[in-house]
Length: 47
Image 1 (cartoon, rainbow, N blue to C red):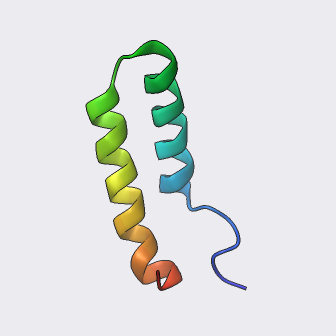
Image 2: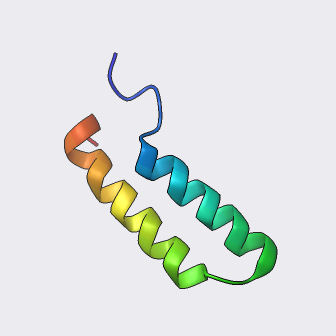
Image 3: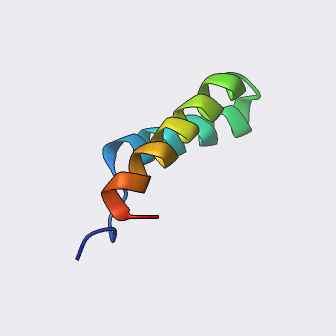
């Protein structure tokens, strides 16, 4: 079944967001990565 596992972009975005949350640095970049991962998930998973 499609959609059970996060994509590579989603994993990277999650890591970046976690780091930004812990350090307070790179929040804008983490947000941008998350947006890109979410946008990529739409066609892949049909969200």
